[in-house]
Length: 113
Image (cartoon, rainbow, N blue to C red; front, top):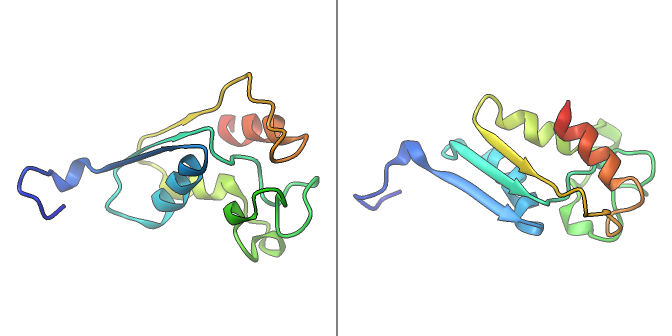
């Protein structure tokens, strides 16, 4: 943003897989981000019923430590970015087996509601 050719009002963030998850974190916490595209991130709810505390155990670095007792989940990260433009990409072919059997269902519920 210190470069003269950069417009600070048009800063965006995007990432795929772990980068999609980081896009959710950065979008929720960094006010300089004005638009975001999260692609196939860990969209399943951390506080979902099919996960061991504190969330999905197969990819623990994407969990929000201490979030389960607070009933905070990925949807809260996406909501924190509102009302800025956000595109969430998740393919129907991704079965979500990495994060548990309910990942696709919870991802659709989180991103559609």
